[in-house]
Length: 249
Image 1 (cartoon, rainbow, N blue to C red):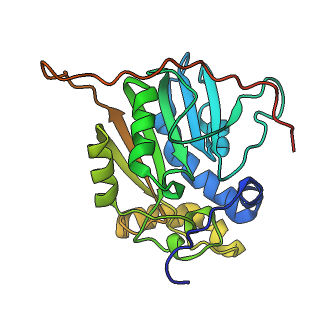
Image 2 (spheres, helix red, strand yellow):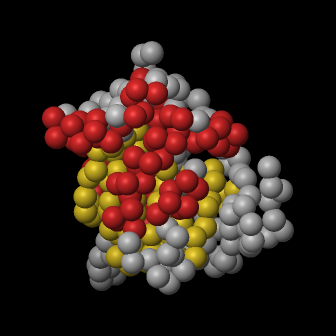
């Protein structure tokens, strides 16, 4: 295919993708990159924004509290499967959270699907604690996955590394690390999936800029307010009420 589709996969499509062989391999490869960045989460509040459930399950099990916030255009499912539901349908420009309540925000299948990435990042900055961390998993404009709609990474607006750097800098984030991922083609071939780990090693060494997705880690920066400059005051917000439970489907 040519340019990536602008259509959004809904929650049913996303769940079906991650239950497929390609989705399971995708989850394994991305989780392997995220896991070292999400160690030592005891007592931390982790927010997954977009469709982050697979990676919250794989990498954020030690967190004190994990919330799965899903974009209104995608829909929502109840999560976790058992116990108190901690998922909710949200407007990415007006998250139902107080300022500075999150230690980490993990965004997957989110920033590329919004009509206002600058506003979305500003809202993420608001809810992150000072020096809180943002982890974005974003389709790579230069990668093969952005050209096929067989996966969620072929939907929405893919980004190059310079584009992401500008967005994050303008939103007052300092970039800590870049991690390219997904070097196997987005095809349902068993042979490819069996060799996926070896392809990741080879691809990251030989073609570091051509992974299907980019994982970027950034830290919220808080600067001193210049004398005489007025500070925007936000209306008071309640903590998210994630009950009554979303019907489990």
